[in-house]
Picture 1 (cartoon, rainbow, N blue to C red):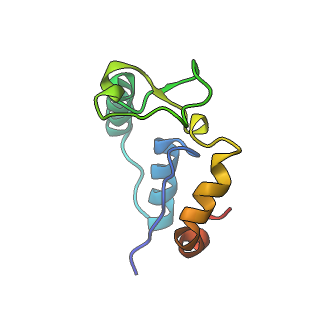
Picture 2: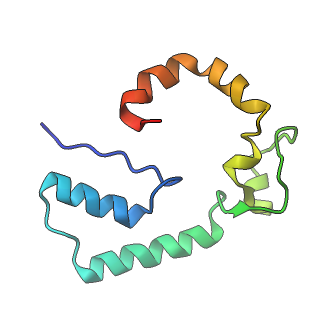
Length: 107
């Protein structure tokens, strides 16, 4: 059986997740050079990636985003979309999905 591990970047650092997968799969750890190169590349991408998060607006529920918006301004945090009013609506819409994924993501 092939080991699996989900790395949720909203909850965990990528490198920490990769190290956990290496351990679980019994792989040798990445060399320091490769690990540093990957961390450096991820840091460069994070500076310009559309998912860069912003705290300047707390509630984006009513805002309609276009793909280009991510390139023109920092992308808001998930919490800006997950307001107390929206959570029950999202739970209702995705109830079947959440039920199927629950064993894998916890909650």
